[in-house]
Length: 402
Image (tube, rainbow, N blue to C red; front, side, top):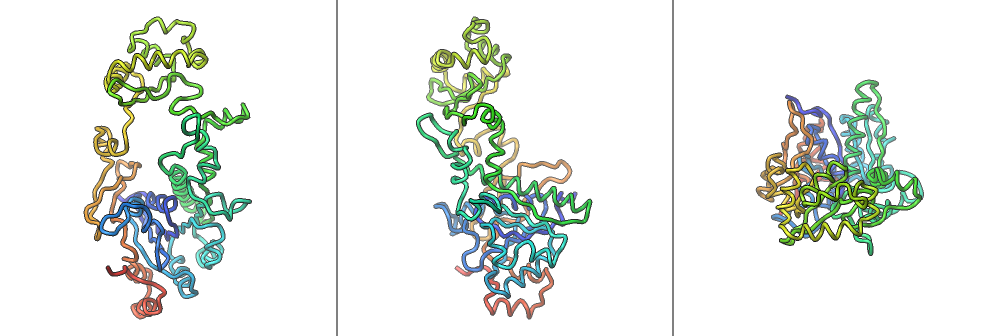
């Protein structure tokens, strides 16, 4: 069966994480993504971080599979002409530079639309394409700070950065979603168009349902560590072995079952704890009692006992434990392997979207910088003599030698 986006051709002008991840999601679903990289250094993430395999950055490899890499000098008119020639033949262009950058390079939306009226041009930025912050430098922790996410995360004494780049992933998913919607619209109407989203908009949207509480109270959510402002008990607890587990008790049915598990049947009707508002009001009394009970047995004992009574709970695992040891993750087959031409055998996460009759496929490993330049140009109709001249003039380049 054909993959859902098979036949869709994308030119990617994006770097770092949000744009590349969004394009990888589309590539996993069958789109042909050509990653157009700055001729000198390419995507910044090729050289970021501290973990490399045979000179290839793990950050880049984690978010750029199923793509081809073309090195192109967009600062020269000849390079811009090459890009616009490619743009005539594709369905989608994506970029996540600071607003105005692609216009200055001569490959912005209006320039592309003049050669391809059906183009879908997607722009993902930190703060949006216009406004008082549009021109400012930013990355996802800056957006965490500005959006309120950081202020509601951590212990009461101090805010904390969310451990993973959540605004980047939110922006990636929103961009991919917008592109798919635009492709459907074009299928129905024949019209292309501009798609825009930002990390800030995605981060704010991800605050649902905390936004509703904020609109009503006029105050931002308190930092409560792993606890919750309106559900109790709903937080981490520690077992006798020192391991922690999260208990998610947010209905009265779960509460009754929890009382059975901890052998406190009288709590069900006790005035202090009989319903969630009462438990919230008397949190300072309930939580220490539960902590003392849970400290009597290992965390795994409580997770098993709670699960048997249909109360949501889970061990707090680190990422390595989740990826390599958790039986449900193994069952889902989230880890897949690829052979990379330089890094060797690498592990990566498969796309989390499933189509029963047309499963997403990992067809290509993350590309070596510029490895597909000649192949892409030839595929887009460039003659051998043209290609040789572009290489000779330094407009394009292949994979650098080591």
